[in-house]
Length: 346
Ligand SMILES: Cc1cc2nc3c(=O)[nH]c(=O)nc-3n(C[C@H](O)[C@H](O)[C@H](O)COP(=O)(O)OP(=O)(O)OC[C@H]3O[C@@H](n4cnc5c(N)ncnc54)[C@H](O)[C@@H]3O)c2cc1C
Image (tube, rainbow, N blue to C red; front, side, top):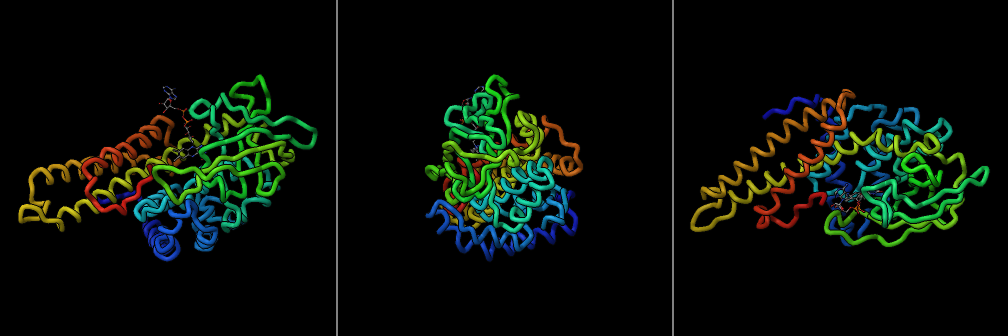
């Protein structure tokens, strides 16, 4: 089915992304997977290519275009290239909106130019060893010392955790406040007491530096509060639809990529004197896969268009996230014989 949500400008951007991936990412990716981390040069190259800060105002060096369809193109192409390790989606679509919508003018001047050039790599740190789904259980505390906070605690499962120069940390600023006692504090590379822990071993995303972070009496200046004091929960909820859509788009792009290479494989591979694609059961499998991809794609394109128009609600964003990744996951089993170079997000 012909996709209808992209214009010629989006497709031109897609070509730019493909060229970038072919030149700056794919040749290095196997090495990055071995290293468990991507190179900082790739981030700077992404910045030079205009792939960072797509929605950041131009005065700070960004693309100045909040149209989510450009982010969707990025997610699709990174997934097709099997290169989730360079976490530009996290940087652009999850951390980015917090900086553009919550930062003061002074904070924007300090952080956004580096955010767009790739000099400042970012992360967001919510999860703790004892607080994952239930953010109310966060134990990292920030105590008020006049012109600064003293931050203590730890985080885990933090993508970009090793590379990050700027980390938005969710910390408890009001002990009895429950969900409404949490604030967003920006911790920067080099602050005394801010230490990285292990770069965690994972079953996927091997080139992605997902790490533990530790805070021992870190002095965080008051000017590094992002948004409202005790407003973290509301701030985090505000951008959830975009976070979900980024994950959804990567999911369906992964499923389509698997369909494409599997179809190629069953046409090439011969058994019992003919290509696998001539066997009826294989044809059933491919037909099912193609149907699931097409139906999911139609729904996700609609959600992408709605989100770009500012009209996507939380319910449909959640449906999109679930459906996008379910379509990719249910197709893992029959694909077990296909080439090993497939890399999805999981
Ligand atoms: C790809 C990826 C990227 C991530 N990026 C970030 C990031 O940028 N920043 C960050 O801070 N964290 C990040 N995380 C961590 C993520 O936020 C946590 O893994 C998630 O919140 C779940 O927490 P947990 O792993 O501690 O599991 P838990 O919350 O301990 O949940 C364990 C299990 O308990 C069950 N469970 C939980 N809640 C319920 C419920 N209400 N009802 C029934 N069962 C339930 C579920 O079966 C669940 O699998 C990332 C994780 C992944 C996989």
